[in-house]
Length: 337
Image 1 (cartoon, rainbow, N blue to C red):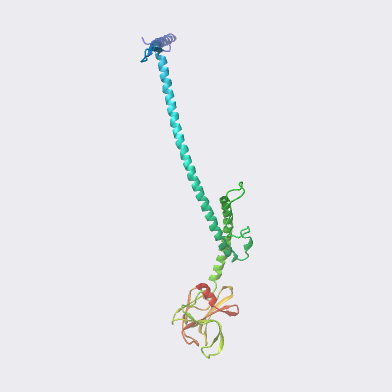
Image 2: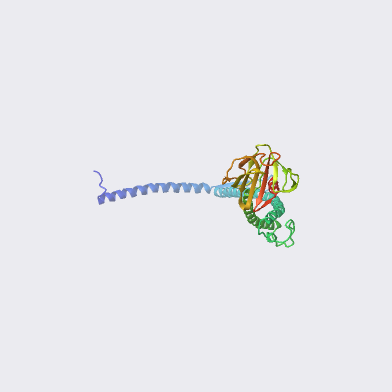
């Protein structure tokens, strides 16, 4: 008949059986452990005689020690040897690390000395560069060169290489700080110079500042002997000799205000530019523009001819500012330089 675990009597029997099994099982284990322990103590308490027999006739020395004592001495000796070995290894490693640190320290001193030399060289280079910045800054309008660097003294002078006060920072630190400060000033100066150059470039691009024709000057601006009647006369421009049909180009962007025929100057083109400039191109063989056309700098406006009262193929080039004619050569020379 099977047990019903839900009946109280059967449940008590089951618990009793389990407890009895555990009790018998652990009692057996405990008894075996006790026997092993007793056997271990018995063997450990066994005595061993250690005898020291001298070669002479002296008394023999006997030592009676248990196995436990010998085991304890051996374990202690092994532990001591292990700890000592570990300490020796660590000490050797420490010695090596200290040696490496000393070597790194020596290398660091060399590197630091090199860095100092490079900083001093950089400082000297920057001091030589400062006059160039000062000169460029002096070309800009409304400049104040005297207080540019906010520091007196000659910008070319080198810093002292020794500082008497031991509490003062190294000269290299002072040099770096000065370079940093002056680089900020240089940055602002270069911004002003950039704005100035951009303005000058804009003015230059709108100024008659290029050669109108590929040739060479045969008559300059000013008083001269006329090639027609050999009398002294004022020549309000320059004559540039060139091959027939050579391209004539506008020397600045502008607007064509006049294309006319003159008995003396022949076929002439006049262009109005910014800033009050006007240019005239005479003795043209033919022209490619009309009144009202807008031309760019370097654009072809005509071709070299021999029209009007001209003894050879040439371009009579004039630059006019307001109501007066000026010598075109300084503008041409400025570009050629």
